[in-house]
Length: 509
Image 1 (cartoon, rainbow, N blue to C red):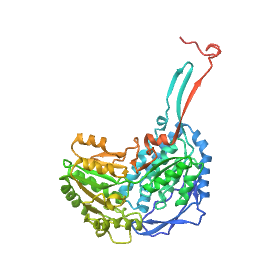
Image 2 (cartoon, one colour):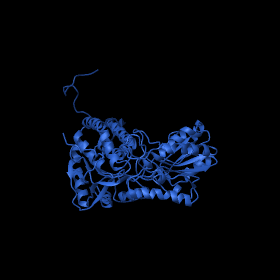
Image 3 (tube, one colour):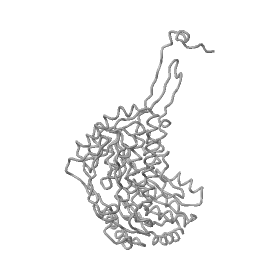
Image 4 (cartoon, rainbow, N blue to C red):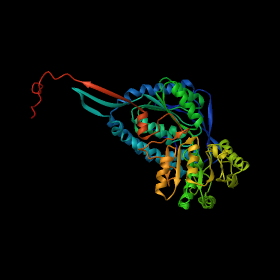
C-alpha cells in the first residue's frame, strides 16, 4: 500500500514543504517560488507550498494527456468498480481529510466533516456513471437506417478551486470528470493545498492509474498556464466574481469549455408569518458557519414588516452562545478566518457600516479569543441599506446584515436588483407565497424554509447573473454534460447476402 500523508495535528512542528503531484508521485517545484501556508487558529506558518512554472504545468498536462487513451478505453464496468473503491476509501479516511481542512482553512471539525460528506455525495452519484452516460437509439429512422447518440470524454480537463472548500469543490469537479473518462489537472488554492495532495494519494491508493489525476500549485502564473494551455479542453472554476470573469474570458478565448462560478450576496427573506425561532436559528447557522467563508452563506437578512423586531431580537439572543476558537476543540462552533489579511478586511466593514448609518448590534472584534489566531467573532448589523458597502460587497466573513422593508414585493425587488444571483431563501408558513417566490426570484438556487439551498448531488449547483459565467452548472446532470461531448451516429448496413441457415444460425419462426 502507498504510504499516505499524516494528517496535521496541533503540536510544534517544522514548516513542511508541499509539492506538486504529477504522474502518481510528489514532484518538488523547481521555480524557486513558493507561498506560506498557515494554521489560522494558531496564527503561525506550518507549510510552504511550491509555485509551478509554465513548464511544470505543461509537464502535468502532458502526463495527463499520455494517460488519457488507456483511461478513456477502460470499460464502464471497471471504471464503476474503481469508483466504488474510491468512495469506500474516501469514506474511511473522511476524518483525516477533515483534519487537513481544519488545520489549514480553520473551519471547525464538524464543518469540515460536513464538507467531506457533501463531496462524497458527488462521488456516490458518479458510481452510477453507466446509467449517466447512456445515449439514445432510433431503429429504422429511415429505411434500413438506424440513428443513435453517444457521449464521449473531452480529454485533459482542469479545475481551479477556492480556499473555502479545499476538499469538496475539487470533488465536485474531478469526480464527474474522471467518471466520464477524462484525465484531470487540479490547481487548488495556495492557502490550503494539503487536502488536494492527500486526495491524489488516496486516488492512487484506490487504484487510479498514474497520470490520470495531477495537482499543480501556484498563483497567477499557474492559473494562466492552465487557461492558455492548448491541450486542456475544459476548465472548471469556483471563486470570486472578478476572477470568474477573467477565467471565463481567458479560457474561452483559447477555445476551451469553461464553467466559472463566481461570488454571491445571498439574501434570506423572512415574512411576518414565519416561525421566527426557526428563521433565527437558520440565519445564525447560515451566516456564521465556517466563519461565513462560503459562497452559499446568508449575508443579508431581509425582514418584512413586523417580523423585523422579533427576528433581530431572536438573533441577538443566540449570538453569545456561539463559541469561537480552535476548530479541533469539541465545543467550538466557529473557527478563525483563513488569513490575517482577510480577517482585517472583513472587520473593516463593521466600522464602515457604522459610519454609513447602520446600527452595529454586535461587533465581532469584542468577542474574539486571545492568541495569535486569525479570529473574528460574530457581528450583526441592523438597518443596513442597499447603498452601504456592507450591503453591496461580498464580505465573505461572519458579518450578518439586516435590511428592513415593508412588503414582500420590496423584498423580492431587493434580491432581483442585486448583481449576484447565487442562492436565496424565504421563510414563511404560506405555501402560496413560497410558490410565488420561486417563480419571481432571480437566483439559481432557492430555499423555502431552508437557509442554504445547496442542491443534492443528482441536481446541479450554480447561480445566475454575476454568480455564473458560461451556461453550465457544476456536478449533477450538467456536470456530466460539461465533461463529455455528444456524438450522433447514423448507420446503414447492406442487406445480408446469405440466409441465417447459411451462416450456421438456427432457423427461427
